[in-house]
Each structure stands twice: as structure tokens, then as C-alpha cells.
Image (spheres, each protein chain N blue to C red):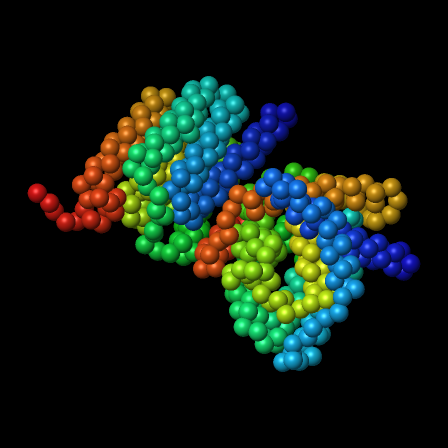
Length: 224
Length: 313
């Protein structure tokens, strides 16, 4: 009895946190300031780490704690610091200028969430009593909205941020479906993210050096 | 029958007296946060008293709408205030209508305010009216989505039933649908009460003003009625938000020892939400008018997600 109660409580916490993650993702689509964008990403990753820790606690799976702690260190602390330093170094002050204007982007994000739910519905088995099948819907939505945001942005730095939030969706799907991939895979992905963020940082810096702008549409022109 | 009357009278009393205090507390807290001393929390009462004892100027071009509007706005807001549960889940005028009636009574007041803005003949009035209507047309769908979410949860659009369903489920607001709806309604609250990312309540010397532009030509007792109605509307919306989502301390009925406890809880929750508003107002800059739809689009999306997720989760 106690165990079932616990599991229900865990389910509620995971659902709540997943909802928060989704709200933050939509806030990211609506955000115009890059600094706030980076901080919202950090907050989203923090919620994700909390979800991982909750799942680890209720499923007695200690290796997920390591994944949660790594998420906390890499995505909540290291990557935001890296990006904020990059911003200071490159003196970026301008606003994000999306291709599709913000109200319509937000509505599209809402529509994509709906698609995410419809897709996740087909994976759901009523007899299965696991944690967070809601989390899967949120994960698919994060994934779709992340893709959309990448397409929608002009500047390299914000595209990288969108890529990272997409990766958050992947992580959420992995922990909510399988209660964690093998630790070695998690480690690989996290280092991948860190390296990707660093390489992207250097790349963004080089784009800026060469073209005097971070606008990737300038990359179409070939230069010797 | 006698009890009903007593209930209505006490809620009316509470609405009239508490609403200037909420405005005063918000102003003082904001001043303190900006390291100013501020005018003191009772200043709105003094302002109202002063305005009521003054004469007034009515523009030559104005028709009867100009003089009727303050009364219509004031009484429709009061009526809306009597239809919401404040201290007890049992609202005094609940037989009169549910949450839709409350929203459209407030809408009636807004409609006449916009007409009066046009009627006064000054160019600022028309400007304010058109802005107010633009914003309310965008805020209303978001509000409706959030309200329907709450109503589906309770199985009724009657506010007494909604509050009654919320009592005893103190942690219900942690459900995702409720949380989305709460976020949407909070954004709408900011837009509807003319708080900072949308409108600046402190000044009528800006070209970007909305509410102040409509009532720019009013003076004396009429201005007092409109100011009072605005703070009652703010109180009504805040009470609606807190009693639908955090029903802590809400009593089933008005009478007995429960009423005092209910009032204490109400004041505590109002103070909390005032602090939140003060923080939001202090850390944000006013948005440009054409950026306001972005905020309301977020509110609408959250409201729709709330409604959808009541069926999915």
C-alpha cells in the first residue's frame, strides 16, 4: 500500500516537473533576450535533473543519480557559464529576430505540443503502471519545438541553444521510457553536449570573426 | 433570507473597504522596493475622500454616456464582486450567475469605459479606448480557456461549485492542467488590471497609457468612482485567481468563527499575490504596445494547453 502511494506521489512530481519543463520551453520560444534565453535553458535543465533524481528515488536505480548530477553540473552550470562568457566576449546585445513573429511562433509551439501528445498517446499502454508516461509526451513536444526553434532563428548562438533544448527532450524521453540508458551512454551523451557546446562556441566565434555577424544566412556566400 | 442579505452586506462592505487598501499596499511596497518612502498604505482612501468633495468639469462635447459611465462601471464591478466567493465558497449572489456572468459584467464596464473615452472628444480618449479594446480582445480568449479548464475540473461554471470542489483538495493546483491555467490567468490578470509589462498604473503623463487615457477627462466624484471601480476590479480578479486555485482557508459558509478565519486567510493570500505583482512590476520594463500581443499569445497557448491537458493527463 505504502509503495503504491509512493509511486503515485512520484508520478505527480514527475508530471508537475515535466509540465514546468514544457512551460519553460514555450517561454524560450517567446523570449527575445539572449541572456534570459540562456537562463531559462538553465532552469529547464534544472527541472530535468530533478525529474531524473525523482525517478532514481522511486525506482531505486542509483545509476540515474549520476546522470542527474551530471546534468546538473554540465547543463545547469557549465554550459550557461560558457555561453554567457561568449556573449560578453563577443559583445552581443541585440535582440533575437526570429523568421516567424513571436505570437505565431508561440501558437505553433502550442500546436506542436498537441502533435507530441497525439504521438505519445499511441505508445501508452493502460495496463502499464510506470512513472511518467506523460513525460514521454512532453519529451516529444520538446523535441519538436526544439527543431522548430532551430529553423526559426537566424543567429548561430540561439540555434545552438535550441539544439541543446532539443537534447533535453531526448534525455527526458530516455529516462521516462527506459528509466535511464546505461550509464556509459549517458556519460557519452553528456560529454558530447559539452564538447558540442564548446565547438559550437568556437564556430560561432569564427563565423562572427569572418562575417562580422552571427547571421548564418550569410554562410550561403562562398568566400576564398 | 435575512442571512443572504447579511452575507451580501458584509461582502459589499469588504469589497468597498479592502480594495483601496490593496492598491495602497501595492504602491507602498513598490516604493519601498525602489528605496522611496512611499505615500503610506491609506493614501488611496484619502485620495477618494478628496475627489468626492471636489467639483467637476464635464467636456462640452460629452453626451449622457459620459455621465452614466462612472455609475455603470462602478455598479457592474460591485455586482461582479458580489458573485464571487471571497471569504466563503458560498457567494452571496450565486443564483444570479456563474463565472461567465462575472467576466461579462466586467466586460460591460469596460465597454462603457471605452465609449466614454470616445465620447469625451479628446484625442487621448479615443486612443486609450482603441488600445483597451485591442488588449481585452486578445486577453479574453486566454482567460476563457483557463476558466473552462477550472470549470471542467469542477463540473460546473458556477463559482460556488468551483470553489466547493476546490475545498479539501489543497494540493490540486499542482496538477499540470491547473498549473497551466493558473499561469495563463496570472498573465491575464496583469493585462486586465493594467500592470507594468502592459500598462503603467502610476502615471497619466505618458503617450503609451491605456486606462489613464480613457479617464483623462474625468474629474471630481466621477473620477473617484472610476478609480474605486478600478481597484475593486483588481480585487475581484485577484480573489478569483486565489480562490479558484489556492482554496486554503476558504470556508464553506459565511457564519460563525469561520468568517474571521476566512478573512484572515483572504488577507494573507492577497498580500502574497500583491508581493508577486510588486516584484513583477519592479523587475520588468513596460512593453511596447505591439509587443503586448506576444505576452497574451503565451497566455493563450498556456490556456489552450491547460484545456487540452485536462483530457490527456
